[in-house]
Image (tube, rainbow, N blue to C red; front, side, top):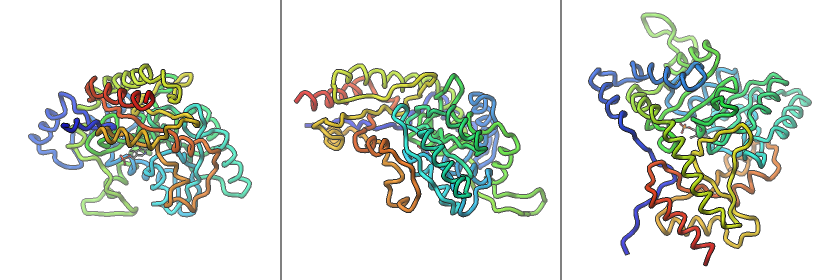
Length: 377
Ligand SMILES: *Cc1c(COP(=O)(O)O)cnc(C)c1O
């Protein structure tokens, strides 16, 4: 039998204008980490981020790193961080030789539990070690309980970084994610809702901070005709070519969000008849970009997550377990954590389904057919 075409979890989906903008960049010879496309990309991104200031950077990871530096996180400082995330959220804390303290999820959004967050803050203060920053993640595009988290952070006067790498286009009470905390982070890696082939952005209401981010991202060069440095710099700027791709992608972001939501709705409609399978719903005020559609298998389901994943793989369909929590990762085994079992259960029983906006209708039907087939067998 002929092998069926591969269905990916979420692959790049290029629109009509990207190549034209890249061509402009080539013709004008702005093939560098500086140029007019970067400026336009920052302006366009700012327009959809409540008019906040934007620094276009080489990755989401670099953006988190700079946010921590700008907050003043140093060696031995404690940083509270969602445990249910991708490792790139936590790694920059370690780049600074600071200590990640990992906070578990709540069941309504699968994101940081506000109660555990406050417990961790109080514990830190009681030990005379107030956490220096909070990194809250909006995983799979689903808004965390961001109003509660920001209120707690404000009560104790601790800066918040929102890792919205997976959540561009998501909102809470109509406000874009990434604009609630002191800093917001986006990623334009190849698997994200829009891509620049690789890239990221740091956003903030604070104009000076974003100017400082650009300075640090371009090797911290002081104003002088020669090369003069009084601070450690980084090579973290986005390339003008990548920004040109990003300009085209931003034009179709809304279309991509609508399509992702359509995909989610379709899976839900088709699979809700299987009683062992459940979905994550939006809570009041939240609007998800549904970057990936995720399912959770019942505790008592005879079919486990790996069985389902391998069956899909056999049919040349990529799926992936929900992200393995950071407190269970060998590399972070020394880190402190505050857990309630939620993220561990999500990892055990959850699966991300193919959610690419460039999937054909027939592709998604093929995924659904196989899942139904497994449960009807
Ligand atoms: C992708 C991702 C990042 C890192 O972004 P890069 O641009 O790949 O460096 C950070 N956090 C989360 C939650 C992500 O999904």
